[in-house]
Length: 615
Ligand code: F6R
Image (cartoon, rainbow, N blue to C red; front, top):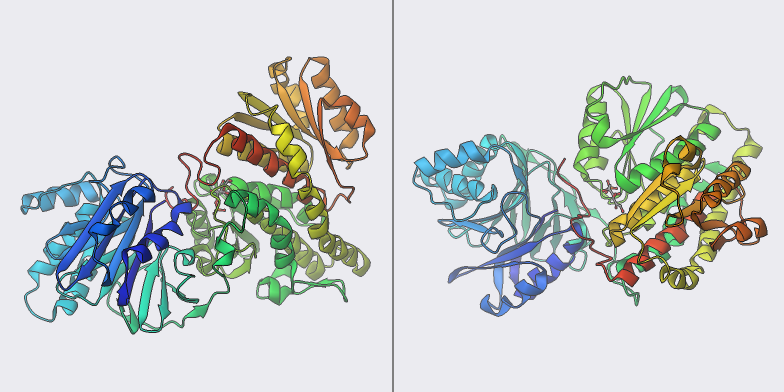
């Protein structure tokens, strides 16, 4: 989805803006633009397509500017053309926007009647003209005071979601923004301030960040950041230090971010465990996990809401949490949860799981749960994200920045955090005795090294991909916790390689999908030695009997499975608790290598965005 950046300070070059936009590329976009304000006026360059197209125009921008804004656009209203790319200008106002203005048609009619000419098909241009119109109406006060007042009036007239970046030629050292529903952070360094859709854009320049909340207007100057509410009340909020580094956002010698991030599964798990499991006592540190202030003892049930890969992590955690904490767990797609008549009360803990912490479906669902009186917990990866702000408590997954659009290491970290939540509940509710709790703590601690061994499969899976990249369809099956892993494997394959893939609980095969099986159907069968092993083997036999081709994932010494399979991925021996973490890795690698073999854009698959801020 769109990305915005802004700068005010001693001077930034065109490549500053381009590089900051590059850090937001992962969000997904199809055109881009930059505006730089100097004593000679404003220079705007925009381009259709990738940032390399905009880069060709950088020499037409001034060498330095004290104020500037940049944008990557993910088209919603109007095609991804140069003309529709942001920023848009109206008189002295230059404006760009992440979000959607829902009432733009009504506003446009009014503005056309007042003589404004529209040059693009976007909803955003309405905001530029509207702000200009309100600014023009004000005849007294300094230009900055008029801008603030005009902006307050504009945000009161807009319906939808927005995070703006705004320049005004009459206030050459000020940058304005307003936020409702779309993410926005501001950063501060010596004599410079910044704004952006996410901290990744700015980590190179500062570690001091502040999250802007909904219904807030921000005024940035080189030495100050002023925030006020839409109705003009000043807001004070301290800056927070974020420990993300530039190195974390580079490829580190890997061919793609995705491959690097798959290789970061172990560290993502280890960092998420760090400080939260106390090995000596065999207990969970509730404060470090971020759940100490929740009424864990008196809860009657959990509802976990999420989308996509985060939803599959949630589905998987249900097995573990119910088994350990002995509490009912419902798992819902956030996009559905919001519209069903879910009954919640103060004894329900609604857990929102989201890598980005910005997903609109999850955000709206958690808002609804909170409004209905539920306790809420955010399990998010991006510190200070909107979902985290919205919940009673926040449990950070510590995967570090995830740049590849398809989620990989964040999945492992989410699973870890949710397993920890299960153990925290078990500890507080005494559903496990001390020895049992210690057993699970010890099991979790083993995960990073077992997952590390699973990564050793990369070369053999790369070779295997040569036999799978030409297929037009694949089926994935698994039972128990391996079913969500099958769902995750099939999602990864389709989004990266554009090969059709479906996943079923293996027990469901006979209820319909078995009709698909013939000698052309390849089935990825997750069959590690767990409580469901024998039953899954029977399903594999059923597939074989109908001519289907088997790619089995099971323990490396499983000769029985090896014999049944046409292809075999052998994972290290491990306990049932650890298994899902270990089987996720080869499926992420399989999707990755098949996509590489097909030559698709692995880090930025078509039509997808990292941060899905529309419903
Ligand atoms: C798949 C993927 C998506 C996200 C989904 C939710 O690889 O990345 O399915 O998992 O869009 O995003 P978050 O976790 O940011 O809420």
